Structure formats: C-alpha cells, structure tokens
Figure 1 (cartoon, helix red, strand yellow):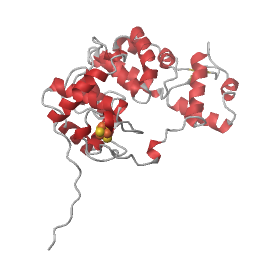
Figure 2: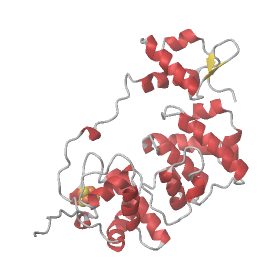
Figure 3: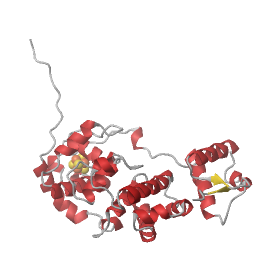
Figure 4: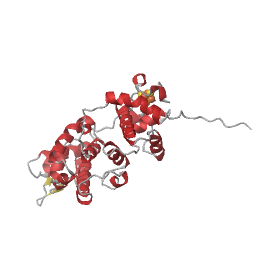
Length: 302
Ligand code: SF4
C-alpha cells in the first residue's frame, strides 16, 4: 500500500530566530512618534489608545488621544464626565459606541478596581468593549506580561511566516497558538516581539502588499517572494452613501449644535428619508442620541 502524499506548510521560525531578525528592525522603525508609546504612558492611556485604534487609523487617533488624555487623564475623570462631552471629544473617529463602552469601562475601573486598570487579561476581558486582543495588548504593552497579542496585522504576518497568503476572517485558537509559539520565554523580549510583529504587519507585510525584499524576516518566512492573490478581501469597506454615513452626519450635527435640534434639521442631512428614519432609530437604540421634553434631539444628557 502506498503512503498518502501529504502537503506540509513551511514551519514557523523559532522564537530565537524571529527575535534576532525582528528586534533590530523594530528598534530602527518603531513608530515612536505615536503619543501612547511615549515613556510614562499609563495603563489607562494604553487602553484608551487600543480602543480608539480598533477601527480608526492611528494617524486620526493620535490628536484625539492627546486631547482626551489631557482632559480625562484617569478612569475616574472619564467616569465623571457628561456623556455628551465624551461623544463630542470622540469627534469623527467613527463607531462612537466605542466611546460609550470606554466610559462604562472607566466607571468599572474607578469603582471596582480603585482606579487601577487590571494587569490580568482575564480580568481585562470582563470590562465592556474589551476583547481578547485589547486585553492582551494592555497586559503586554503596559504591564510587560507574556501573552500572545493577536490583531489582524499579527494574524496576517503569522499566516505568511507559515506559508499562507493570509489568515482566516476571525481569530481562531490555532492563530493564538501559532502566535504564542513565536514568543521567546523572557516576558520583556516577548512583549517587544509582539509589538514588532504588529509593526511589521502595519508597515511592511500589509493586506495589500508584501515588501519581502526589505523585510527583516525574509529568510525565515514561508511566503517570502510569493505573489498575493487578487481577492475581494483587499477592497476597502465602502462608507459613502451607507447607513453608517447617515448616522455619522446626524452625530456631527448634534455634536456641533449649541442645543437640542428640531427633527426638521435632522431630516435635512440626507435626501433619502427612509435612511434617515432608520439611522435615527438605531442611534436612539444605541444610546447615542435622545430627545428632550419637547421632542427635540440631543446627545445623551448625562
Ligand atoms: Fe511578509 Fe514577505 Fe516579510 Fe514574509 S518576507 S513577512 S511575506 S513581507
């Protein structure tokens, strides 16, 4: 009987080899201009930066983060702020429900953790809006714990190191195990490797291109030099003309208004009345807007 032919994917590099290739490159290319990477940034500052960066480009996050941390440097400060001010400061970063979750998170940290952001990922994951990635990011980037920090960039880089063009749509246990297997034993070095993998995915090995010729891990990568397949996953998500666009216009109107706004002004933000009705209903349901006693619209009053 003939043995079945097996196709095996290239093995991932050893943690030592990866650290040796990656860390000198990271020291030279780390985006130290990002304000939350300054020495002295608190765990709260790191957590705020991670939530803001979940669905917004870091260049847009940076100025908002600076103003935010100056205004509300601790969880207790944000917990005590009027929610309307929190949404105004969030500005046009999009997905403003994150601002509401962040304020809920601040209240819990202030009241149940004496104002100290937990260092244990399991505790962090109990906070509103904090998933596996954000919990690990705070535990590693601020507290220096040894945990796999797996975001879209890291999943993609790890998949390519293992010979695949990209990772699947959602983080799987296999993704976490693969990222974990690349970490050196020493926690401080492991934290730097995690950050460096993320940086490599943001700058060199992106969703749209691979710069294998200048990549520091090119001799240890199973996908090095290969062409990326064409695919719909590489298309940008459309914003213009979507329901999210209409909700963004309504939020902008209320953020910039001096007081409560008549319904007629809301209806005027978009020509398709059905889309306006749908957006208003969703914003009310999400707790992002409300009405005063006369039925005019405003940001949440507390
Ligand atoms: Fe990505 Fe190419 Fe570097 Fe591999 S060698 S990690 S595919 S840029």
